[in-house]
Image (cartoon, rainbow, N blue to C red; front, side):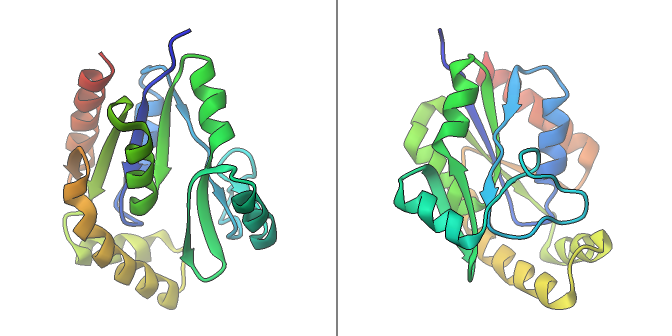
Amino acid sequence: MKSGKLIIFSAPSGSGKTTLVKHVLSKGFNLEFSISATSRNPRGTEENGKDYYFLSPEEFRKKIDEGAFLEWEEVYSNTFYGTLKSEVDRITANGNNVVFDVDVVGGLNIKSFYGERALAVFVQPPSVEELEKRLESRGTDDAETIKKRIDKAEQELSYAGKFDVIIINDNLDEATKETEKILRNFLN
């Protein structure tokens, strides 16, 4: 059975990558979402095993020691994110294509592991100011968390050129059309 391809979406928080991922999942590209693991607490209506695999920092460290992750990162102190190897194997064993919604460093790690079998897409906000407005309008984070995310975003933007494709998300309708076109070309 042919294994699927991997499509990696990375971006600073608030750039719209999750919106683009949800869009392409609804478009019949034989895609299945790779659920990441994290040691942070659920936000809003997030569910374990659907949005993330929520682990305690101790459980996360144990899985790191066991070599269970394809990639992982300690994004903030005691806040880990990672991609379980078992998740990719589960999806590709069925011949499905895997979609990742991961941070910038994780996305580049997955790309380097899978090479040409993976497409790394960087979703870029129109500006840092716009990004800050989007994060504030979400209403999910306090001012200190937003400041941390903006500081991190400024650093993450410097990685854009290392990705296969950059989509500037200043108009969601255009960004979704561009994303669909890029996926069609890569998957065919």
